[in-house]
Length: 263
Image: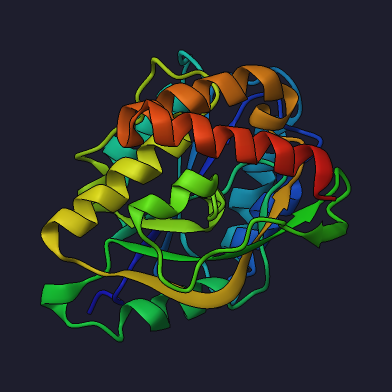
């Protein structure tokens, strides 16, 4: 009998040979067995593929082996690759754990699964979410993420910024397939995607469940961080689209002030 719920963990890579091993090891160390690891590689030319092949070999010798699938082909960028993952995911839930990120501990997926199983089949959570820690290039703890996940998540929560890190945001795969990433956004399509997912949950009257745990150790130097100015303007456009310009401008001003003065 299939273990419920099952999870598709997605890792999108491109020339990530320096950081991908700790991500692969983190997935391999999970005690939960119903895991599909879907790796989307944009034709890396460094050591990435060597690390992936070694990972596949190690998987056969682990106590909790899981399914590994690799899609290796050119893409139009990160969010295009993530859309491929959504379309191809076989698990009940999908989460993105990219090169350099890792699960907070070996029982992270166990904890998410236990939270989901508290609900009836008719009331399966659209989203399960939790907290995030930041790590440096060597995987060492820097600090807890300044934005904390709210006890009760709503689509309005994201007016204060992305309160739940994308890597700690588990989504029902059937819902994810209805809302692919909008490729008009280069840096913040994940922000837009999460809002659309949450609004769908609210419209259907379905829960979003707080796991109440730190779920992810997130590599601090992500694409949004590297393109912070462009990302801020893009997020402003997304806020205006979902919440209106007045609310967007007021919230964006607060986010900018917070980024300057809150350390």
